[in-house]
Image (cartoon, rainbow over all chains, first blue to last red; front, side):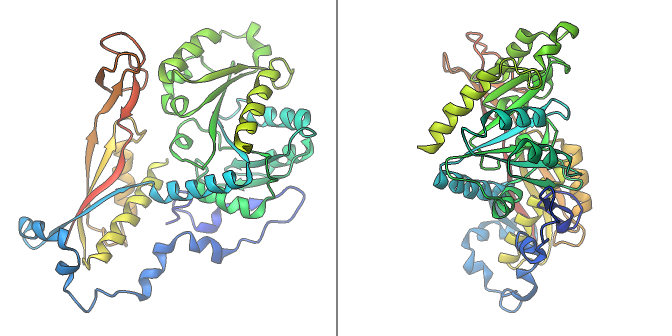
Length: 288
Length: 112
């Protein structure tokens, strides 16, 4: 069981690659350390031979008699604790370097990669931009980002449907992220699962394109509730589609009244100043 | 299919706790799942029944307590039970903020 990606695939099914280069060493040892439950128990079973556990765990006592030989153990732990602890560690990493980290989430095909390409071309002289690309397969997006001129690492999740905090932690050991720069994390195209996994980012940016339904915020509320900015992309296509921008915003505001919006066309360039303004403001805040 | 990730987390926490207490087997794992946590319960249980094999919880039941969503109105302070994100305040029609229902927690284990 690989709990890094969440699927029944071996730990090395998740790969980390840079365009134009060779695969990064898989570092099996390293990855296995992310699954510590797999080995520490092999050799250390201190309870096998002595059984005075009732005294070591007094809170177990009162339940002993309730369950006919069985016992109840209190646990009270968050299921995502490992991810959340690693996310906090990543957050500290970003804060220590004054790096703004953004988690870009959307359905497949909303234009995340196109927005990144355009942003890199327009802003790379102004601020250091680094990208982590998440996809199930292929190096395609990383190649586009590299061609636009930013350092990039591709994470292929295999069958995994989202990036998790451990993947980002591992990526940060492979990728140089300059201090006071911006790290743009393009999550796996999926409006469901990535909502649940904190990567340690400052904000989630949800991208929706006008070729999708304007009721998406109602259909996938968890993602719109978790985001701080909603980018409405492909506005150049508005004359050709039925998408109602105001209805989409209203639906999103009902889920998340504090959500901010930017309308733009990443390919035609209209509206980009709103996005860049938001980025600059957030970057200045993160660099403090 | 993030349910499999959640199940891996549940089993990891359960096995760790059971070993710590010297338990030989886990009979029941009780979890609390909020209605707004984005979890498909049938899928969670299906994944659990697959992933538990080979663990201390190989024969265990997953007992799920569903917790209701709770919203609080930032404008008037009213609270209400909600079952979706975009709920309106029953008192003043403002948008409720979600204050409960996102829980994902292992509560307890029954072990031998």
